[in-house]
Length: 534
Ligand code: G4P
Image (cartoon, rainbow, N blue to C red):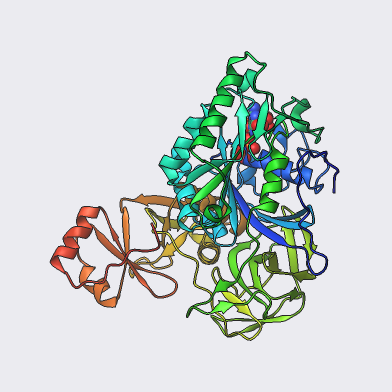
């Protein structure tokens, strides 16, 4: 653990015995707001990496990318896959689940949010909440996940901080309760005031933030300055106190208020205060509800849920990894767990933690931890594992696809590889795969929430399965779940296509909302259910 000078009066949360407490969280942001930089700085502060730049190669000049492992990720400079990183800070073990950082909304990110207990939202101080990621933030809010907000890049000219608070409140409907407050921005940025202690943390530009550096705080002196940005900050602080925009733990835990921090990840500024807050404020894992409403006690038998499945994670291994969030009990490698869906028992001899390409064997894991089970070929997203096989957690909520395309093998000689690849991508939930009675496996329909899902599918089909695909966009925009009767009655309607899923369920695709409304009008008794929570 690195030693960091601190003027705050925090009490270490390390318990006297037993496993260290956990905080399992994700960082979400609009691309470029600074998620990667912040992740890297968290690891730096926690002593998990020694120099900044280890997580991502900057301009290809530094070490190999750690969490960006796919070619596509490297070429596009984005992180598509999720891995879990574990590190320690102040006696608390933090599990940081990586979320895909691309512009599109992706189902993958949504699933990651099902496996965390809190979320850090990173905003660019000059941009506020950007429209493309609004959906992601809304998902986090709708799940009532406690959200911490980090306003990044304060070293650059920024939006007025009060406007940023308004933006959060108006867009997300959350009370924004600043814990720190910026003094100046860009060239006049002097630091942040910790509203709890009245201290000013002074901003210093350390060279590219490669090491932690000293952090100094002094009590703020309001009277003897004539700088405009300072008097503005003092006025704003008075205003915040007057309207009682103060952090309240219960509002934060209930997901109705978000504590806000300001800083600059690049310059390692405000990062430690945020990391401290994750430890101090973010909730520890709590008991999950099982189907049927029963609470699964944290200290009971081992249970967990698969939130991600990924094949060929490492081209050197060519295997299939299922990521399981432990919900209760103490997991020990090698123990037998039962998959509730299939009733089959699996031994967990190959349990790992995965950080980019690196794997380490996990011998023990407690609630909040993520275990990567290698070659557990039977496991699908949403599966519940438990010792006695009697527990089932609610499935991971799905999103209604809005984009559809038919896929076929570019070369007919590769049809076997094509079928195998499509099946794998379907199981992993990279895209949803639908099959019509006519075209079946030859030309399945790929359905997605974000366009990037198609790109990932095409890239992986060519790279991992040796089957290049040709995608032809379809002009459907709305999908509804139906039943056999609905499928028959809708079969010959114009602007409607019925297709089946792997699990046997039927989906009706409509060209427009208007077509859907017309079908409803003509057949009021038809089953046409919304898919997921969108
Ligand atoms: P992302 O994962 O959310 O996509 O963002 P990332 O951390 O990659 O940051 C995007 C860009 O913003 C990077 O610059 C990064 O250095 C810069 N950045 C991150 N935090 C801060 C900050 O606090 N202040 C300033 N001024 N810049 C910040 P880049 O030019 O794209 O990359 P690089 O050449 O610096 O690596």
